[in-house]
Amino acid sequence: MKIVKLSAEQFNKYASQHRYRNYCQTSQYANVMVKFGYHAQFLGIATDDNKLIGATLLMYKEVFMGNKVAYAPHGILFDYEDLENTKEMVKILKKTLSKQGIMFIRIDPYIPLTIRDNEGNTMNFNNKGNQIIENLTKSGFKYKGKTLYFETEKPRWEALVLLQRDIREIFNKVDKRTRNKLRRASNSGVEVYKDNNKDITTFYRFVAKKEKKPINYFKTLCNSFEDSIDIYYAKINTETYLINSRRNYEKEVEFNETLAEKVQDMNLDIKDRETYLNKKMESDKLITVYKNNLLKATDLLKSNPDGIPIGTAMVIKYDNAAYVIAEGIDEEYGALNASTIIKWQLIEDYNNQGFKYVNLNGVVGDFENQNEYSGLNESKLGFNSIITEYVGEFDMVLNNLMYSWYQKTNNK
View (spheres, rainbow, N blue to C red):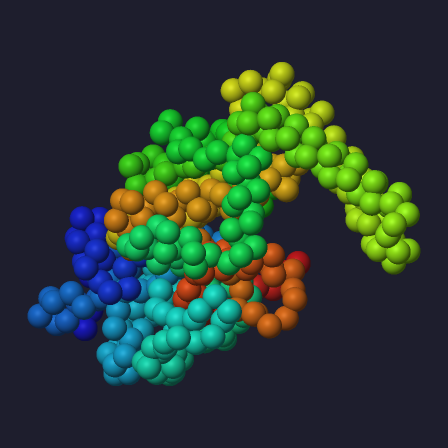
């Protein structure tokens, strides 16, 4: 077994046929990361008679006294099920990278461990998953564990909506709360459209607060992946928003007047009148809300007659699937559920185009306890998503002395 250098074309050809292929193991992704301080190389793992049995995009950067740290995004494309082959691959990889001054490498193979329903119940599992973890640790990697939350590089848990079905069937399986959010968004005049011009400046305005990456990262992503990138926006149709706001206000005023009559109806017993009084007090609050919405909608129509964007999502299309890689909303209009209606539009569009699934990106694996990510999970799992749990991250130190110095220096 030996390590060989591959061209971008050779690497893409091999990677596109591998069962653990992913958009992070592509030359397009390498082009993006090179723009942001990384070096990239395509390495092949070959037998002595030059048969290619593995490959990886390896990204690395210099961090300390000429020494480098490396990362294989979503792992080395290799069959880890054979212990002896894995040991030999790791041995020659370590030797090769050490000569390049790489003192540390991290991998996170895109290998499913379990498939679960939207409540976290196991539906299927990889019967080789634990063996793969054991083989990697026996070969020299340190396993970072089966964390329930987010890892250092990529999510270990992802939510996927399966497509290639009648859209009515998909909608009927959507959680009731999510369906209500979709109806409220639609009734409020929120519409979704695809931005064929890929306006990154507008897109970045929505994602800047939650994304650590600079705007040029997303510009480079679009340039590198070209037609494989889609950008969607949700916007308020301000005319519809005004019409519906007025309708909601007038309907609630009418209902409030009916309640007021019931409260004053002396033919009812005291208990019934108290019940109507409580309902009227709630209605009074709603009238205030709807009145404020009506005033806001009136102003919005005047200032934004063509509508106003309130949310966005960027998607990479790869291997007959659509991956949501970034999304964001205008928090001022959070109650209008822009994120929810965008996700539904993605599901509709990519289902019509014959895609296998939409990957809604990361969730957390804690399905029983309330935590800071419970809302995130609900926003994605409400679409009757299935959850893929991956094996996770593995680290290996190639130069203990230099890495120890680097850590000490980096922690000061």
